[in-house]
Length: 85
Figure 1: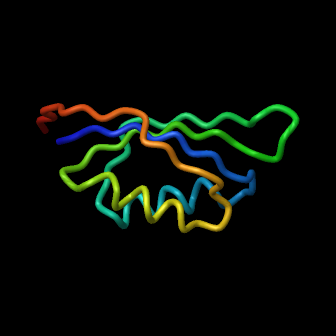
Figure 2: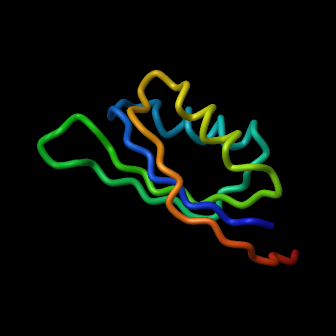
C-alpha cells in the first residue's frame, strides 16, 4: 500500500470532519492517522490526514477540493509501505 499525508485547511463547522471522512472512504482510501487543530483567532481548522491506498492520491485531492467548506488541500508526503494484515 502507498501512504499519503494531506494537509487540509477548512472552515470550522460541525459536519466538516464527517464530510472529509465520507469522501475519503468513498474514494477507496483507508485512514491511517488523523489530527485536527482549531486555528487560533480564526473560524478555520487544520487537518492532517494520513491515508493508505493503491489508488492515486490525486483522485482524493480533487474530490476534497470540491467540498464547499474546504479552503485548501496540500499533498505533503508520500511513501511506499508494505502493510500486511
